[in-house]
Amino acid sequence: EIGSLTELFPDLNTVIVGLKRNDDIITPKFNDKILENDLAYLICPSDFAARVLSILGYQNEQARRIVLVGGGSIGKEVGKLIESKIDNISLRIIEKDENIADDLSDKFDKSFVILGSGMDKDILNEAEISNADILISLTNSDETNFISAAFAKSDGCDRVIALLNNKDFQGLIRSVDIGDFLDPKAITVSSILRHVRRGHIRNIYTLSDGSAEVIEGEVSSSSELVGPTIEELHLANGLRIGGILRDKNIIMPRGDTKIKEGDYVTIFSIPEKIHEVEQLFRVSASYY
Image (cartoon, rainbow, N blue to C red; front, top):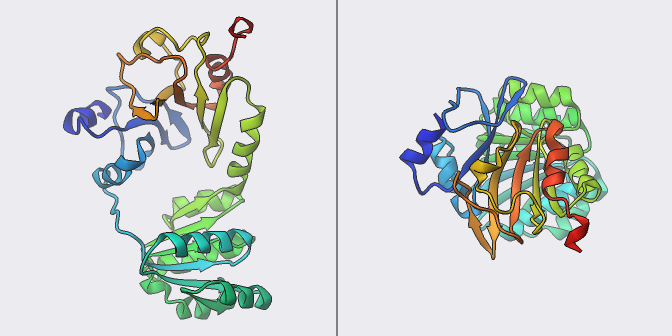
């Protein structure tokens, strides 16, 4: 049961805000159970992320041997970030465009650039994918990203991440347990919705398949969130408060937690309840 996590690890500082079971999204209650193959959505302070993942059975070793497929605009930025943030790395970049590959060779000091396609098994072998901790495929081709990820997984690469637009590929990469995917449309939609949503909404993240959103907003004095405890709010099914930021301090919500004016509150919501979240962050005319 979800409640047993709190009892076993009282200082874990995490909230399970949603479960995806088959095609259904569940906003779990205290006595709900997590089943095998459920996809769990959790909110926790970044300092606790490693411990949370460890408890859930994920190893948290830093990837050192990295293969990056695609040196375009996205790949280049990711490569720069990897070089600047991770020490003692072995980064191999695969790029099929000769001009781009030459440019990458000039700009990346710690990396080895390989000219070729991520769909070419010989090229992937040259990049030593069988010994890689992670392969990240970020080309503008779903086919290349999917196939390079599948090759890497079959050759023993510990982890793979593929940039995928096509929902069929997204479903397939999970169903056959190849690895994880990034959905560029979800990232774009999130950035647009940040400006479209009403109220004091500051950030939005749309889950990859559009089945839910995580919304952060600033609470005004006129908000219904101010005053009652979270338990007394009686939020609708499909909504779950995941975190509160107050004066630079993170508060993990419990039933007796009260929200104050000026708090930044993170709410997990299914699409049908987005309007209710907007109302919670709505500013009444009397506020001004």
